[in-house]
Length: 204
Image 1 (cartoon, rainbow, N blue to C red):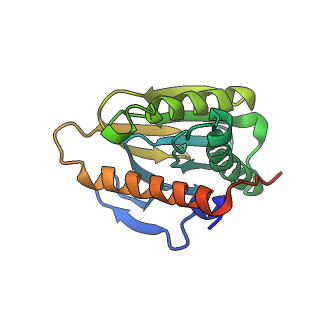
Image 2 (cartoon, one colour):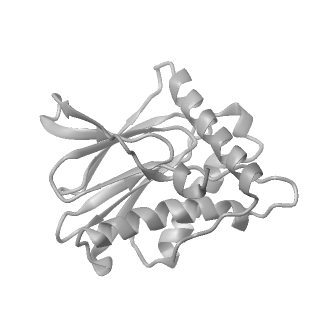
């Protein structure tokens, strides 16, 4: 398994029709992203993971990713683990540009990074994810026009790329076992990938 297998467009996207918003929708899971040129809704649920909602504010071309930095092992630096986040951001931005978005028109809204996984508390995964996405976007000169990061509750994110609208629902009273299980499973996949490969290669 390579890093590109961990952060990819879903091979079989989970499409559905959202009756509440009366629009076609797609749901993405940890390690996935989706980009679109047409009016639709992109949905995800975040615990410690982070999602970047990026769009061309002129054309409305936009997409969302859902990613997590791996835990930092002894002798490993944050820069090493950040390669996973870098890939997740690059693959989404490159997809948007291929679809016709203009880099100068890109803007971002960022969400997640909650401290909802007890096993990740010592590694401050949510905080590292949040710090990474802010730093990456600053370096790439993509303005952050809205954010909702950190805290202790999971979030459900609804992104309407063509309108630039994001709606956030804090999951305060719900049972969040499924969210935690998904993120823990994704974390295990990342760890197994590092053990198998030792290094991570980014595309240019």
